[in-house]
Length: 293
Image (tube, rainbow, N blue to C red; front, side):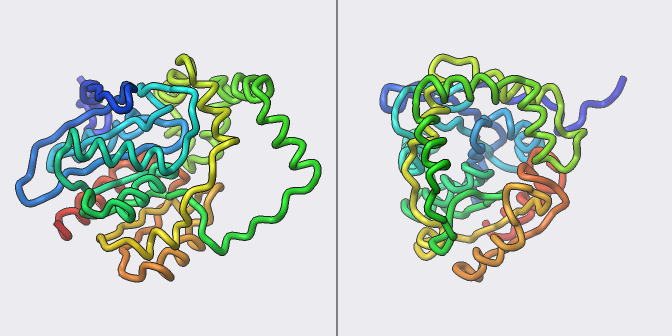
């Protein structure tokens, strides 16, 4: 019989918490360590707690680990409302206060990284440290050209419910999910049927299309450099440097410009290094936590 790998173990059981009358899904695993804060994992756009399965399986052996589905994603409620970094910052902050009940080390991928940074910078008493994996979010000096007439037209069309609905039906097809993942993962073997199903399943929930449409209407949040100027906690950056969506080396340089005391590692992976090379990421996270806390 083949032994079960640490990264193949079953996800911890689901739990739910009521926030603003919405069901919020989360998982918890591992054991409390008296001298170390718990680790809270925050997924990226379109993902969920399932995307951290391989990380929780190993990190739970030596750390207290939590993961949460942001409102609008995963197994959490998907109301038709405005979504923003501020909304998710408040959700995570209240979750730490009401459920975890002590400051945490925040770790986030892509959108989840931006949310983690928002929480740690703007609600510093809720955090002890921050781990960002290919984090999203703009810097103040990011060049944004004024949209031309065609771009304005396209955006205007996509803001129409019928258009965003049709686009959503297209992008959520499993074949298109697979194509997108194969573009943003360096190792095609990491794009499994289980991963595709984990992303597809929440797209079938009531309200999922409205959440997708809300992306085109979301206000831009606080700039990364502004958040870094408020940050006072240890910061670890983990970059999949083959990410086609993010120029990891350039962004890492900008992070160092505003927060020179950070620690960073560049790895041979794409946009989701925690899922693509989990053993390497888990070792770096665990080592950094043990060294700093």
